[in-house]
Length: 347
Length: 265
Image (cartoon, rainbow over all chains, first blue to last red; front, side):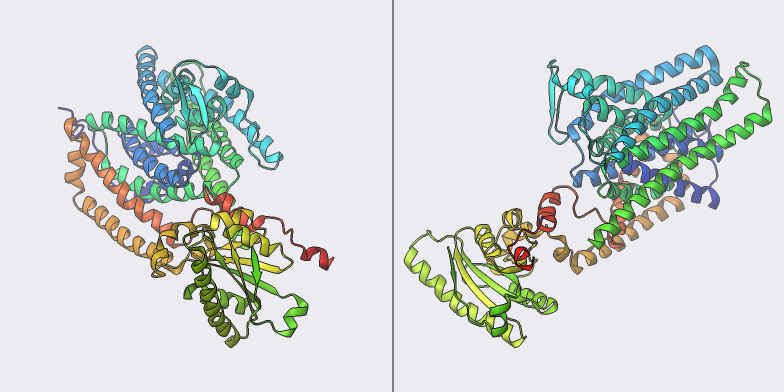
């Protein structure tokens, strides 16, 4: 028997939880439609704070992620921003990365227990987001200073593209010709990060931009295809174990489909560096949030002694900061979009 | 090849070189929609109308009889067009040309006239004209009947201002209502039978397809609804986005290089 019915009880829904999930879904969708991923990192802890058991929260979240990515990628495909071939190939290899990520998690869980595993997740969050986020931020600021033109591709992707290593793949929409062997590590890292912190795009999009050499518009749009492929595979596995609470999924989906359409529309108005900017801002704020959550796990492993009240305050602040990250991202997107719209109608 | 034949040039315009709308017509007959639109705009903006009849295939078939038919068509049509313009107090001139429409437009625009913008016959490829023309070029959305010219419809999508019609807006509202109702019905169906569906999707095993199929269905219906919802509110992709970027930009943002600038200086 695979059913979760006997082991895990699904929560009762009330008006507060419905409105909360709908709104977080909407904002998460807006960010996803714009930068290709995001929102999921708030939804899982958000649902858990409503009393949803961990695995059910992860499963229901993932089950809303892939249809959202599908709707977003169709919309952005119509704007000519999606490279389907690139997305599907990356998605398939990312699937392998997800499996590797799960193996690593299980290994850590066996060795150091749940607190150790949580600490590992937080550490991964902080290191990845701080390094990649500050790199993207620096690039975005440089572009903003230059007046917003997408600068020339950096040396790394130029050099990688010049290496003729069989099999070479050509991506028409992305306008890139590169060896499969450079795609695979980016895809696997995306999958591993997705399995660890639920947002593979924080590696996937910068990887596509700086290692493969795709523009930020095409990278963020193609990430939606990767998220769809990964999400569909993951959902089937979770659903096989009966962990999906379809009611939660549908409520979040209700909000996020509004958001993802709006976010996709937003990409057609803003300069390319805005995508990098929003992404970097969210990554850096989320890194702060996870940093605040670390004392809890350090305490549990008896490595530090912060005391219970400090830990609970820090955990709540950490969740609040994550919400702030999403809100700030959504605010930048909407402000940039409506400003550009106003200018266009005046012209 | 540009031949000029002024039919109706009021005294004032002869000396002052009026600002004009250039109406490009393919062949010897302007479609009623094109004429009506051009006159409407000219009246609103206080401009004159210059109709350019372009024989785009001067070497096709029996050249002599083709030429005659073209000339006869132009004479008749220009008289009718001029009459309509006179009734509304709009100055009207016409010229004929042969060869490529884009070259004819270029020659006219650079020919010392003050052309404020160009309106193209639906039968003329607007992209080719817009690419080389220094003033804005507009197409005309003529759904519902200029005979065999419907096949050119796709080419008029670029100048968004004219073709983002009331029709599109109505279609979006209709889509919003239809898909909105369907989405509400789906949500109502799921949440009135939430126990059954939640249990089915939590059964695991082969029942794993239940939640996946459900979300696919919802993403189609609800996704179409949300897409139409933003469109109906007028929140749509930037007009300068994607493929149309080059054509529209070329039509509106190119530097004005006309000779008139030097005369005024």
